[in-house]
Length: 485
Image (tube, rainbow, N blue to C red; front, side, top):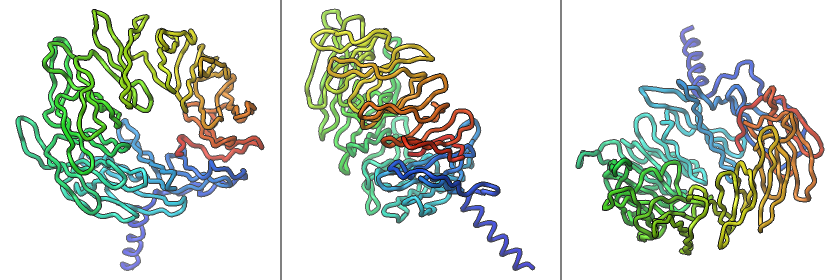
């Protein structure tokens, strides 16, 4: 009897650790739809479970992937389409003030593997090819490469990828120096490590250009009524620190990774003024001094606009990544916040009026709500709910596309999907300008995904997932809250 009890306890322990309980849950939902490159893809159901969607069936993976901790929802789901690899966290929980999880992967839509239990949720980093670094609850850094997970270092508090194989990490134990704690920072891959310097933190990693930015001497500087948080910034690439720039503005790293230009505070000035450095090569290049303000104005972050004071007038200047330079005076009190650069055209959007700049401001349209830059094309909306007009603009030609009930639309490879009508009808306009209405009563907040003429969308009323193309419409009967695609 004791042996039976022990046997049952072992079964319960292992099943509880590995799988999310799915009692009374559907494992598979069958339906009939046509094959398309849209499939397979993943969704999250209204029960927060991960589902695999194929053209003929929806399969429950039996993993919960969204958890409520306090007032927040926590999830880590990373679908690397080029590798047919899904990496996700489950069993997310708080322990001693740290959020922990179990880390899994699904390869080729059918092979599920546990990578590591009790991983620090906020430490997970994936490269573009599916390599992983993460820190466990004991502060040990691990690296997963080619499906093999190995330990790298103990006592680690931060890790970031700078390329597919190379990463930087910071140790947890530091030393007090000039009033701030500095920690050893290393570059490494699965086979070696190299000490770089003692710093406060790795503030950003630019994977596109294999660079990282490390800061120390962090402080807040008061300039009359304005205060700015700055630090010395050390630029890393190719296994070493290339150079450093003092007094770099820390706010420009928020939610951004790619940097061609960096702003530095000019501390010799009585008011807040900046210097601009180009930082995408092996040495820094000072491009301008004592500027008033600057920001990127192109989606690819290759065009930087800034303002200077010249003869008591505000001059606008553009820096391009190919080292071209342009200066001009804007009319109508426009600032760099009103500038957008796309497809070799400078757009000015101010007070709901849209212009392009060529020698002077040329008006495109009035009453403009929002601008959208997609595939080197410019779209903009006019009007108020419940009826928006969507326009495209190119080569000095504007063209109305459709009336829409919301400003929710998608454009890719010549296919234009949009919501219109009182019931939020989802329709498509194809490359040949043929229009087809697909699904009514679509939930615009959840959105939709598509490939060519095939689309997947969610009904507003009951959150049911529908599949549609020109041959018809299918209700999968699965209720979802998120696409993973």
